[in-house]
Every structure is written in C-alpha cells, then in structure tokens.
Image (cartoon, rainbow, N blue to C red; front, side):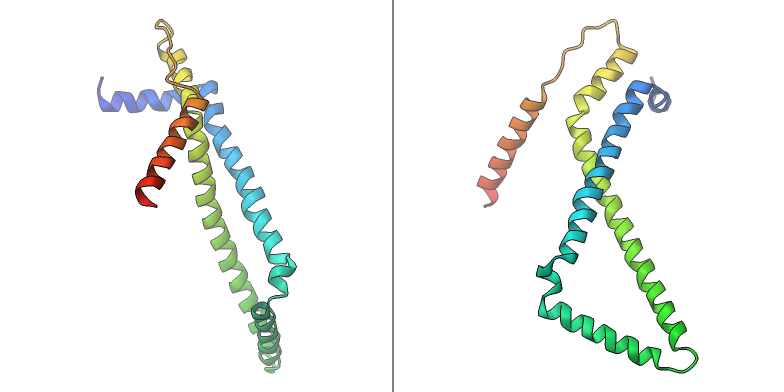
Length: 159
C-alpha cells in the first residue's frame, strides 16, 4: 500500500460518524474552555477593582479622556478622527483576540485529543480490522501516571 493510498484511506475515514464525533469533541470542548476560562476570566480581570483602581490604569484613563477632548476639539474633522481611531483600535483588538483565542482552542483540542487517542484507535480498529482482537494500549489513569512521572523527572532535572 502506497502513501497516496493511505492518504485516501484516511480521508475516507473522515466520513465515518464514529470518527467524526471523536474529532469534533475536542474542538467543541476547546471552544467552550477558551470561551469560559480565556475570555471569561480575562473580562472578569479587566473589570475587577484590582485592575480598575490601579494608579497606572487611572492615569491611562485620564490621558485617554484628555486626548479625546483635544482631538474632538479640532473643527470639522475631530469627530471623524475619533470615530476612525476607535474603529482601528477595535478591529486590532478583535483580531488579536481571535488569533490568540484560536491558538488556545488548538492547544486545548490537542490536549483533549491526547486523552482520546485510545478511543480513536479503537474506532479505526473497528472500522478496518474487525477480524482481529483489540488490545487497548493503556488507560486514562495509566497515561496520567506516565505524565506525572515525566513531569517529576523533568522537574528533578531542570529545577
């Protein structure tokens, strides 16, 4: 079997509902986790009194109000400049949020997929090799134990 045949076989596997469900679960869970933990906690942090009562934040707010009143005082085009600057900053902040959020979704999806690998292997086995006995290659607890040992070994070596 050539590499091209394997690629076509893999693409054909994507039509299987068992595999599709196992591929979309990490994506959906990643979106939910990023939405809740990423944007939710970030928004909570930005509106907390810890941040808003900071001297630096209050100085920046004062500077912003002074800059807006100065630019807004320009005859004829002051309002248009404020509108345009607000639009530019909003678009840039939105793009940065989408870019960072998509990387976080990918990271969470990869972590969740790592925990679902045994399930994906079993789905492929059931699809292509039903005549052989399936022997799992571990469990979630076993993988967590190996990750814990690896983390401890890493900490011992580098800390």
